[in-house]
Length: 466
Image (tube, rainbow, N blue to C red; front, side, top):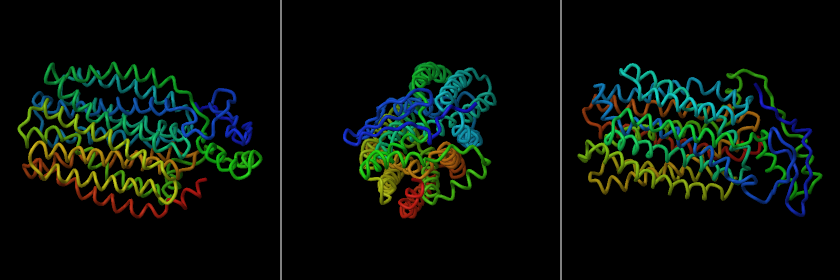
C-alpha cells in the first residue's frame, strides 16, 4: 500500500508576500490551508512530541534489561559475554530489517507504520516476562530488537517533512531527548521493579504505556512529502521575488520516484559526502553509547559496591539530567545557522565533551566524581546527536529520506550492537569491567576526527539537494 500524495506540480499555491503566509496542501488526505512562513514550527510541536514519546518507550523497553540484568543473570545463570550478546543479537536483527523499512517509509503511510511497530513492542515486552527458559528469553529479545528500530526511518522522515530546516534541530532534539531519556528511565525502572517485585514484572509494566503511546501517535496526520523543503523554498523565493518566484520554485519540486532497487538507492545516497561522514561518526558514537548504558549500572555496582537498584537509579537519574541539559543546549545552538557546516561543528564540540566525560567516569574513582563525569558524558552525547540527525535531513533529497534515515540507523545500529558485547567479552577476558570499559574510548575519539572532515562538504551537499 502506498500513501496518497499530491503531485508537487499540481499543488495549488498562493503566496501573500506582505503577510508571510502561503496556502498549500499540507496533509496527504486533506485540503489546502494557510501556512505561516515566518513561524519556525509552522504546524506546532505535537508531531515531534508524539514521535519523541515513541522513541522514549522504545528505549525504555530495550533498557529495562540493563537495570534488571543482575537479577536476570542470577535467575538464568549466564556469563557477562552472554549478557553482552543479548542486545548485540537484538540490534543485528533490527539492522537486518532497516533498509527494507526505509524503502517502505518512502512508499507507505508512515504514521500507520509507526503505530503498528509500537503495538508489536508491547506484545514482545509481555512475552519477555513470560519466558520460562533463557533460550525463550533470548529469542524474544531478538524479536523485539528486530522491531525496535523500525520506527526510525518513517518517524525521521515525518519530522523532516513537518519542519523546515530552521526548526529541524529542535524537532530532532525532541526525538533524541525522548530516545536518550528512555535509556536511563529504562535502567531506573528495571532496577527498581526487579528489586521491589521480580524481574518478570519489569517487562509487564512496560506494555501498558506502549498502548497509550500508540494511540497518541495515531493522532498525527500524514504530511505531504517534502513539505518542510517546500516551505524553505517558499521563504527564499518570497523574500527574493514574491509570489511568482515562489510558484516557479515549487512547480519544479522533484516527483516521488518509486524506481530503483534498495542497493541502488543506498549507493546513490552514500555518494553524499556529508551523509557518509554523519553515518560513520554516529556509528562510532553508538558503539560507545550503547555500551555505556547497558553496563553502567553493573559498573557502578562492582566498582562502588552499590546495590543494583541504587546503581541503576543513580546512573539513570544523573544520565537523564545530563541528557536534558545536552538536548537543550545542542538544539538551541544547532539551529542558529544552517550553513558553513555549523551543525556538524556544534556536534563535534559536544562529542568531544562527552568523550572526555566518559574517560573521567571510567578512570577516576569515587561516586561523586564518577557521577559528575557521567553527567558530562551524557550531556555531550545528547547535544551532538540531534545536530547530526538534522544535518543528515538537510542533505538527503526529500523523496529518499526514508531510505536515507534507514541507512543512518542501519549502520549506527550495527555500531551500537557491538558495544555491549565488546565490553562483556573484554570483561571476561581481562577479568575487569573497568578495563573493558576503556575499549569504548578509541572509537569515540575517531568519531571526532570523522566529523571534522565531513563539515567541509556540508554546504555543497546542501546546495545540491535544494
